[in-house]
Image 1 (cartoon, rainbow, N blue to C red):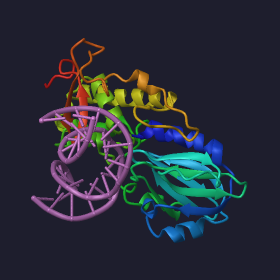
Image 2: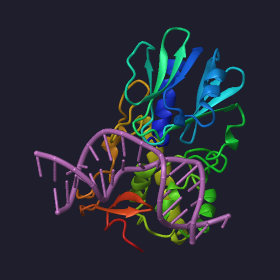
Image 3: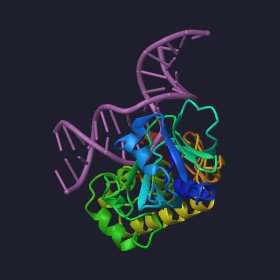
Image 4: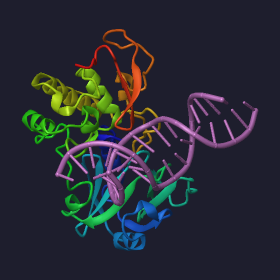
Length: 275
DNA sequence: CATCATACCTGTTCGC
DNA sequence: TGCGAACAGGTATGAT
């Protein structure tokens, strides 16, 4: 869920909450969230100050004093919220950063898929999962000519290609379906079969949808909340995701749901015809 | 190397 | 009504 617009929304709200705070103690209730030794994770974070919160694709990067960075990925359900160390532990609270000012930051994750790793600042891009990431949607590196070149040698279908973070990073299942609908491309088309014109339409659709979604503070369809507990606003703009069986806003045909690249996929069989 | 399947998790929805 | 199966989906990893 959290795709790039949601992670960016979390980054912004998190910044408001934690900037300048100094960590007194870190509690890890569910060690599998931490990549590496969780005790050493807690030990190394003592007395460190949070200087900045960055984002790279869907990764959050907590910049700390002493050249340390916490790389955090929310995966499906991860959430951060401001709390107090005295608060009762929620069933799904897994990590708590206790600050010297008496507040704390809790990491909550129903499905325990999220991960955190402590690295030396500057080495985060060597980490598995970040090392091979393609350019972020909306970034200067994500150019039309790059995109054309990247799709040229991909035999797999366009949906799987867009979900592949090594091609373009930041998109997930929801925005992939939305961009394919907007650019009128059938999700199972082999990526290398797209015409230049279709690639351009798709490229523009990605940029338009992601930037709009960031403006609207992300999409809440199931449980997404930012660090201040607020829902996003983009769900009111969704054209296909979650609308299977309803009418296409463009042509009135009934939207269909199938399975592509192992994911639920909703599309308009008329607008997004196989070509 | 590219592609695909599976594992990781738990809450919710679906089918019988 | 109850219960198990299927589904939700981002990424790491192993298989092909």
